[in-house]
Amino acid sequence: MQSRTITIDINNRGKNISSDHQICAERLRAQALEVQSRLELMEQTISILSEMIDPSTDIAKFVDNTYEGNAFIRLQFQLFRILIIDICAGILDDDNRTSSIRAILKELRRDSIALDSLKAYYADPTCLLVTVENESLDMQDIEIEKKETINRKIREDLASISKQWVEIDTDAQILNGDDAKRILWARNSVVAHYEKSPAGLIALNDNPPYGIGKLTWDEPICFFGKVRPFVYQVIGLITSTSWDEPRSSKFYAKCFWDRFKNGSTTLKP
Image (cartoon, rainbow, N blue to C red; front, side):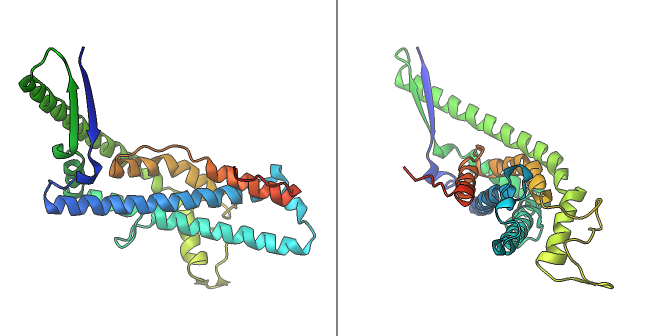
């Protein structure tokens, strides 16, 4: 009976590759982790805003025709603005100075150095610790088995990175549609800058030059839901991690609005 266990020494990962590869890979990781933290904020904003604009929740009726309703609609608009800003900053901006999904893709496409750096970083054999248990093998055979296991793991990791990148490079078109351009238009013309037109200041109730009709309250939410799997796919490639559906933000939003509607409070355990 033989068993193998592979563990990764995270603290030594990438320490035995070229300094150029290490710097490039760790810079990409830092950018991806920054995007991931922005995504968590987006999830929270969406959870709160979704309850406000969903007619089935009837939240707005509690402040209809009240002074509080004025503050409510302003809060709704501010959350809408924040979501647009975060989507653009974390996903759609392509400026080299930013940490965004587009900027990461741009660097990966610019030349082979970035992708080669990731391959070197995650295929560094010195951070792989292998344990082989087999009573029929002597120490020399066990060492041979360890080396074969490490080499097999490296081949699998390299093949996985190459496969993931081909899929990501193809699927990246999801960021180039009219829905993405409408959100960028809103950020650039209304949210981040007060852009002028011949008729006066551009407003959110103007029609964007892309797609059809005015920007709706749920448009950024729908766009985020559409691109979310792709975005986490890119982060997974860069950080070698998997993504789980976040649930806490939805729960917190529900508790908040339950308190708003009926005064009930969900106490922390």
